[in-house]
Length: 444
Ligand code: UD1
Ligand code: CA
Image (cartoon, rainbow, N blue to C red; front, side):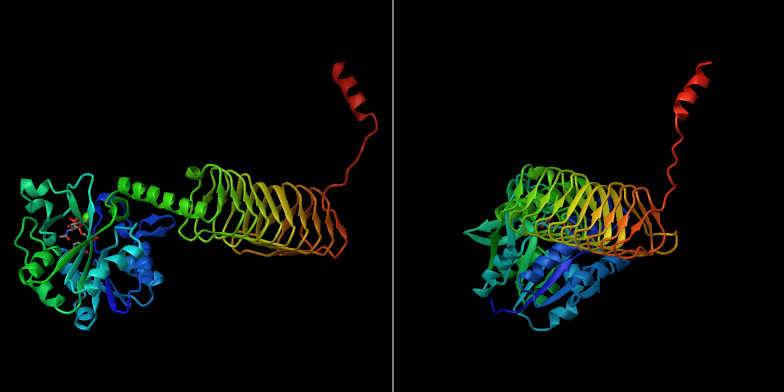
C-alpha cells in the first residue's frame, strides 16, 4: 500500500477500574505494556507518522510510548471529553496532508498489524470511513454498527440505543480509519449532545453518510479486539496472548509437553529442535539457540542460550546470563550477568553473579561468587579448564587461572595461578581412637 498513513493512539484513559497506581495502558501483557503492543503492531503495519494522545500527568505513559516508538509525537488531552475530542488533540498533526488516518485504543492490546492493513483497504477504494466491527457474544457496552442495504449508516452507543438497536450484535471494536482529506471537517462537526455529554468519534459515520460519503465495516474476531478495563479482562487478554505465542512457537517447531504451563514473552525467540518441559517461565529478553532443552520449573529473563545447552530443572537465569555452546546449568542454580564458556558445567546449587567462566570449566555443587560488599559489585574470572571444588566461596574481585583447581570448601580471596591448586580451609586433624575413649567416658 503506497498511501501515507498517520496513526493516532488514544491512551488518555483513567483506568480507575484497574484499581492501580499504574496507568491502565502501562499494564503488561506477555512482558510488555498494552501501549507498546499496540504501537509495535501499528508500526509494523506501516504507519508513517504516530501520535499518542495521553492524559494530563501521564509522563510515564509518554515515556513508554517514546521507548517503543522514538519518533512518535505526544499530545496531551487536557480534559477527557470523549474519543472525538481526544483525536482532535492531534489537530496539528491532522493539518498536514495525509492519505489515511488510523485511530486505535491503547487498551486493545491483542490487535495485530494485519487488522490495521485490512482496515485501510476500503479507504484506497474511496471510502471516507472504515470501522473495525465484530460479532459480540454479549454486545452490552459497545457501539452497535447500524447497517442498511449493506451500507454502514451509523454507530449507536449503548446509552443512546433503542431496544431494537440494542439487539444488534454487530459492534464497533474501536479501531477506525479515515480518509485524511476532509477528516478535520467531520471531527469539527461532531457535537456532544448525547447521554454521556461526550464527543463521540463514532458519530463520524453518520456525518459522513449524511454527506453522501461511503462508510465501510471490516470484520475481525472478538478475541482480537478484546478491550481491557479491569484486572479480569487483563488476565483474559494475557491468556489469549499466551495461547498465541505458544502456538507460534509450536508451529515454528518447538517441542512442549504441556504448552499450557509454559509462559512466554512477546520477544522470546527459539532456534531449531528446542524442547521445553512443563512449567517454564520466560520473562522478556530470552533467546534460545538450536538443540536446547529447558527442563521443568525454570525461570529465565534476559538470557542468551547458545546451541545444545541444557538448563534446569529449577534453574534461574537472570539478565546478562550468556550460556555458551554445550554448557550445562543444573538444578537450583542462579546465574546473573555471567558468561559461561563452551562446555562449562554448573550442575547444582550454585550462585554465579558478575562472572566470566571459561570453556570446559567445572563448577562444583554449592559454589558461590561473593560479588557484593553491600556497596559495589565485583568480578570473578575463572579461566578455561579450571575446576572449582564443591562448596567453595570465591570472594570477588578474584581470578582463578587456566586449568587451576580449587579445593572443596575453600574461601578463595586471592588470585589462583594457572594450573595451581588452591586450598583455603582448616587443615584436617585425626586423633587416633578418640571416639572409643569418648564413648567409654560417657558410659561411666
Ligand atoms: C468506545 C466506542 C464504542 C466501542 C468501544 C470499543 C466511542 C464513542 N465509543 O466506547 O463504539 O464499541 O469503544 O471498546 O468511541 N479516550 C480518550 N479520551 C477521551 C475518551 C476516551 O483518550 O476523552 C480513550 C480511552 O482511553 C480508551 C478509548 O479512548 O482507550 C475508548 O474510550 P472509552 O470511554 O473506553 O469508550 P467506550 O465507551 O468503551
Ligand atoms: Ca472502553
